[in-house]
Each structure stands twice: as structure tokens, then as C-alpha cells.
Image (cartoon, rainbow, N blue to C red; front, side, top):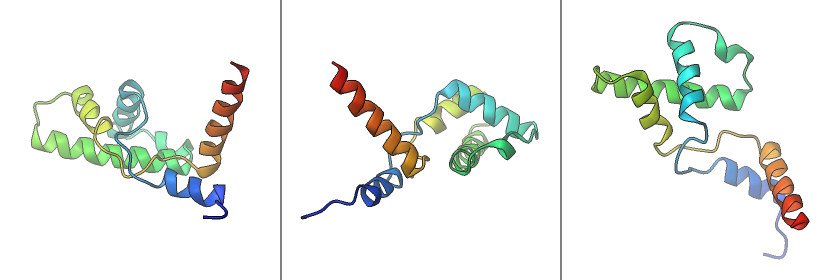
Amino acid sequence: MDFIDIDIAVEKVVNSPCSRFWISEERATAVISAIIRGQPILDSMRPTKREMFIELHARVCNIRNDAPEMNLYDAVFLAVNSPAPKFYMTPGYALNIIYKTKKDRHKM
């Protein structure tokens, strides 16, 4: 290619599958627990984070339906560490990470 449009490239990357959900098991457990208790925790989240937690909640419910004896943390651990359909971040946020990493590398 003669020209790479960084915006298009980053859009493709953030919407591509990845090896896992990039959130800690502890944070995911806290949020999923709040969802189960009926707290409106999703209402204040950015759309991408909300979408990720809705997906994780569905996976945790499926895991616990298949293994009702499993505790919440273990079900969340399995869900978080399973392949994710995308990165659940905006292209702008991904670009900020890239630029910050490049800046930090140049300091070395």
C-alpha cells in the first residue's frame, strides 16, 4: 500500500478478536456481582465498557447454568480469560495508548 490510514487501521484493530477480555478478574467480579444484584452500575459506563460487561455477564450466566456449584469469582475468571470478540475500546483510546507508548519509548 502507498498509504495507510491510521484511523481505519486502528478501527479494524479495536474491532478484531483478541485472546481475552482486557480487564482484571477482580474488577469484572465486582461489576458482574452488582449487575446480578440489580444495581444500575452499567448506566454510568461508556458504551464500549457497557457492551463488554453485558457480554461478560451473559458468559458468566452460561457458565453458571452449566456448573451451578461454581462460585461467581471462578465463573468470572473463566469468562474474562476466554477469547473476546473485540477489544472493547474506542479507536481514539487505542490511539492514545499507541502515542503514549511511543512517547515513553523515546524517553529511554
